[in-house]
View 1 (cartoon, rainbow over the protein chains, first blue to last red):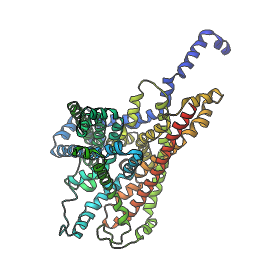
View 2 (view 1 turned 45 degrees about the vertical axis):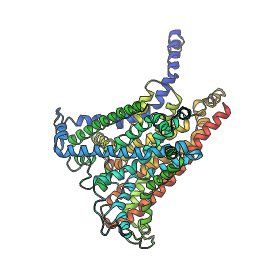
View 3 (view 1 turned 30 degrees about the vertical axis):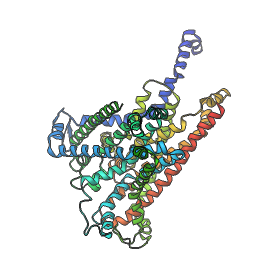
View 4 (view 1 turned 60 degrees about the vertical axis):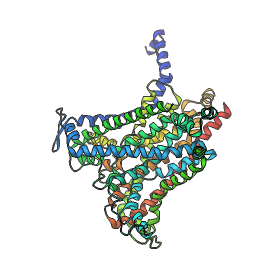
Length: 305
Length: 273
């Protein structure tokens, strides 16, 4: 019975076609990536959807009331404490990304244009501290900036100050310094990659046509590396806005950021929906800020040409 | 004239040197004060001691945390590397619609604020009724390790000469046989490199573990707990130094292997092409 069915021409054709389909590139490729894709769907996309859903709900002690409400967003956007934390987080992440990009650009330029044979060694040297624990790097800044810390005791030892300064630790500047240091390597790599792609003959052509080095840099190299600057800015800005460890360890009362408030809602305060709304608001605002940064850098790039 | 000199190597190499100092200096204070006699980290140094290191093995909570970190790191790095191999292979070998979107999604944890990734996972796990444990930490670490694993493996798989595999298939090897005897030996260094990178990330990771663990601490969580007590600082500095050294060694080996993998696929591919 089965043998006869298999022998019948139409069925054999569909099977052959199915086999061809199964062996086709797209299907094989998709089948191969599907476990990883599913993992990301279940542990990243689904959780984010759950957070978004929670942000429209209300919590009564231990039970979640699933009636739609915008109350959490009203609180997140109008309560002075959350508004201030949000502004401060945005200000800090914007400042940090500006500093890291400005500090990183010359290094990326140096490695790309003057690195010679040691390019990969340079990159390795620069990325190594980044691979050490983030917590430990923040902790070392606490050791440096503390009241009885390295900087204070060092400066006193050198006779520059008479008593320890309290201005170093537990404020937003300490947070900015620490984050700038922590994200430095992350900004160099994308800028370096885009500088490597800059066609050197274009720079030569600009010089041949009478542009000085500074002019050819500003009009050729810098605009052509703009994509790297954009990704460097974004890769620093988006994660730092939600940083938790740095404000907690070196920020003190004046350096608290939105992530600390979000964590409190999921911990002590136990108001998940409000925490969810704060997370969603943060993500939306940082996305807007990232979009604006991209537009501004692109506009500058066009101006430079 | 001035501009030329400014953009040429001279000034920039001074800047590059200062930049490296800025990158390394803060980290170097940890080992320095971990061998200092005085328990508070300040100058002048008061003398050399290994006392703080000698105390470490006598702290049961720390040994538990180290054991937990090891278990989580091994599980997370293996899982993330397996998922990374599948994805990197698919991305470098096949062309299909939606490839870039899927790739972007898998890489997304790299650029999202960790706190938000952590609390979203926490919410889902609590909803699913999973009790928080080292297992949930592993699940979280796998998610954030996959992008790194992908990056390392893609650089190992790229430039891999497909005709080698075709030749093997033509000579009668099965798909699995080809993978085991041709593909795997070529990409083995990249795979080991990915395992080491993922292990290092898991070992050092704090936020995800902090949110997703129940009562069991990993090393960074243990350190976090100790930071509240000023008197515990020297021990934390000693432990931190050991972690720094471990990360440094693991990453150096991983980088050497990754380069070897990239060189191997490119050279040998070129030779036989």
